[in-house]
Image (cartoon, rainbow, N blue to C red; front, side, top):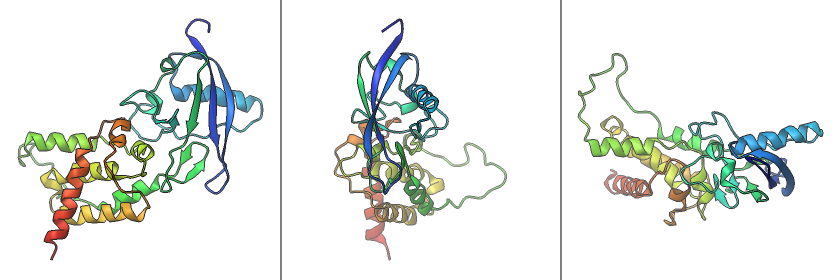
Length: 253
């Protein structure tokens, strides 16, 4: 190692599409700056592959600021890598050592079919959100900030849940490939606020049923989802979702 650079070996899952048989391929990442992000490291490797007329590694990315939720891969068996509360794009190479071998895999879930290599189809998340529908609020002039009183404990809970970026790390980390944490966060962000109350009952049933329809597994409270979440969404949201769901079924006409 010279200066602030390291050399690492990548073992990357390569798969042409969801129906193809995938396999690991090894690549050398040389003279990588320890200040480089993980995705920048892959960029360097891909540049080298393109110079050799080889197909670059396909991976999801967009904002590279930990906001969009696009990036995601399992790094050495851990969703988003070894640093907690961090997206893959915000993981830096200083978390690794010279000579390390880094194993890269896509999210593993039947509801997240592989598009190619590390990129997976997460449109199942979109359909869960779509099933939740809209909130019936009046549009036009914005109401005064104090027009609707919301207790701080509820507004804080709603905002914490709303910080979910839908990256899918919770699914990848769960031994059952459950989407309960994601779905619960999207339900809770509305259920805690008066604006989301009118459709509260129909929303929770529609979203949970859609989650099951997509083929995600059941939650068995392993807490792996909370540990992997880059936004630190709490498992207590799943308890809230289950409570909302059961209350709706019991009181349904």
